[in-house]
Length: 243
Image 1: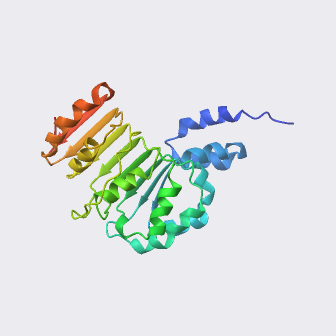
Image 2: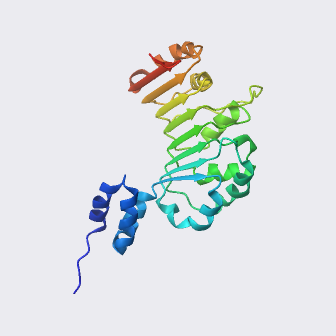
Image 3: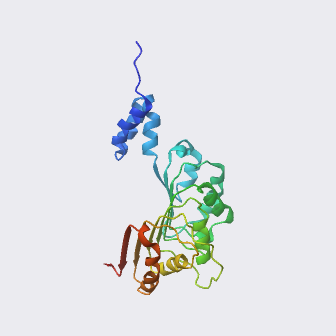
């Protein structure tokens, strides 16, 4: 006796109700062969890879790569750069073309080998959301060039970034396709000044500024009127006080 199977769209809709229940999704993926793709699509949607995990992931995790939408690459606060330098160049052999959001956390970008840096910038060139959290770069020009390496970027979050103050390299134009910007570190004025120096401003819909540096309030006074009616959400917080 043949049993009629549900359309894939209906299976997706049913399992979507379990999107926050990892254990149930894993159970569903082994109960019925017809559910495997839908379940994997959901429980592999968010993937976090640690420096200790990257070698194993590149060996045994290839099957889930097509399902990844949000990827986090993170290191220990003690920073094990060698593991990243050994494995990151191998990313160029994979296809992460469905990843929409990328987070780099506790990464010493300025100590990564050029092949590793290029692998990240080329493999994730299609992302629309980017977050840097506690990373170190050679200079602000390095940061601005890295941001501009992602041509489809719409949402940018910058959280506690360090760079060499002596860097005076020329900055590229600010990406005009950005729609949301969030900064959470004392040097937020640098990104605002870069934004202010642009010949063409992006049509920002949301701006979140969290810092302990009141100097940037002068930059905001000049910047905010330029956005006009495009800015729909604004949050400014100095020294933990929401303005």
